[in-house]
Amino acid sequence: MSALTEAKVPDIGGSKDVPVIEVLIKVGDTVKKDQGLITLESDKATMEVPAPFAGTVRELKVKLGDELSEGDVVALIEAADEVAVSSVKPASSEIPAPKKPEPAAPVVAAAVADTAPAVVAPAAVPAVAASSPIRTPPVSFDAEALMPANVPYASPSVRVFARELGVDLSKVKGSERGGRISKVDVQQFVKSALVSGVASSGGGSGLNLIPWPQVDFAKFGAIESQPLSRIKKISGANLARNWAMIPHVTQNDEADITEMDLFRKKLAEEHKEVKVTPLVFMMKAVVAALKKYPNFNASLEGDNLILKKYFHIGIAVDTPDGLVVPVIRDVDKKGLLELAAELAVISAKARDKKLGPNDMQGGCFSISSLGGIGGTGFTPIINAPEVAILGVSKSQIKPIWNGTEFTPRLMLPLSLSYDHRVIDGAAAARFASFLTQSLADLRQLLL
Ligand code: CAO
Image 1 (cartoon, helix red, strand yellow):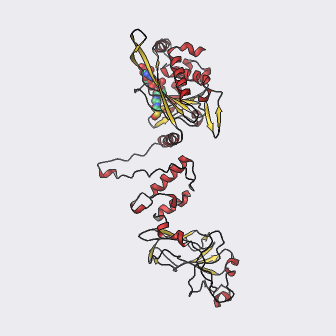
Image 2 (cartoon, rainbow, N blue to C red):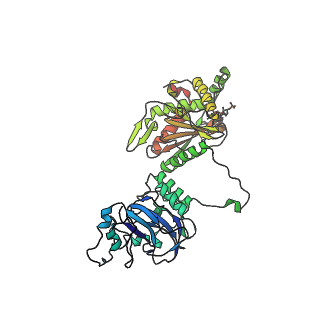
Image 3 (cartoon, rainbow, N blue to C red):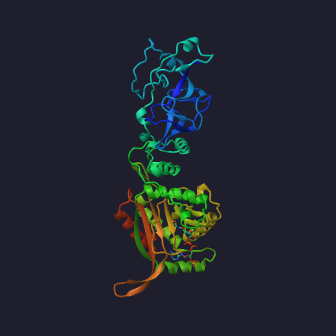
């Protein structure tokens, strides 16, 4: 067995009698260099005492609630590398002058006070170690980094939580009193890092969002807390990412669907077995527009635009548990009635929670129709990795000037959100304009 070496509390900025609020190790644990052994919490900061070298914890000298100051012994550690300990034996009894350690250099000894033996000599330790205590160089902690003002202020559980997520607490802004970092601050930091695609180590290009407001709502009146459904959690995460990462612009337009709706009603009359709504006409018009403007049937992959030669359309379906987007495949190859039947099947499947992952994959472009409900326009959020989405609102009869007089026309509001990294405003205006023309005169779809 190697000699046992004392791990001591390093320079903690002059703080004295600082309580131990967390013991992070137990006897028998193997520790890495710089791994936290205990956490001390003063009224100004929380700080970990790191292992000065790798090894095995043989004895713990502190317990929760103990009050420690610089130089107090935390644990006895058997160094993993015997050479590391023996190599520090000085040639004479003179103690080397303290040097500021170089962080990259291997640590060869623990903290040791000038007067105290650095190596404890239990029975198993070689006699030489017991009789002539090894004097080791001074502490290898970076006192600067451990100064209370430089140590992130967070409770032990938050520190453990951050460690589990691999978050560097020094990069997290604390929202609590005195800048204390809460669990929510850490979660918010992780969310921002994920959204920005920046690793927790940073890089300066994150969103750098301020933490989510923490409000005790119960202070202002009665409340009830309801857990979000699984679908809401999943779709919420997707929507938040898409909204944050895609530069959205929404182009609004109106289609005169007077003739289209007459045709729809006639079709519905003749084919009572299916429900023919304006949505199937939108799907056909969208496919014609995607063929004419292929950049809308694309996905961004790094510096490349992946253009798709197939036409699968996602349809946003409102279910009691939240929004899902099943995909209807090969819309270009299907007629209006077939699409109407498929739409009925897939939306029923969505509402019955019977959609499988396959039903929701492979979409090229999505349509979100709120036309059955109401509204004059909205901003649909692009369903990444698609680059555009069409929002459909409720049609209504409006007086439209035909050059000589106002005539009543059934007008359908359309809202086209597009990824401005891929699509220019002019292209979006053309795409929307093509859609309105096609819906106004369905013969266009045959061209
Ligand atoms: N203008 C006027 N009336 C419209 C219309 C429009 N744009 N679109 C549909 N309607 C009518 C339909 O013709 C139908 O009328 P009848 O009951 O008289 O036959 C009625 O509104 C209801 O239509 P519907 O909503 O059942 O059918 P749909 O084909 O239009 O839509 C579906 C199907 C699944 C898309 C829809 O039910 C749905 O879930 N929409 C919500 C999508 C959503 O939540 N989007 C928001 C995403 S962002 O949060």
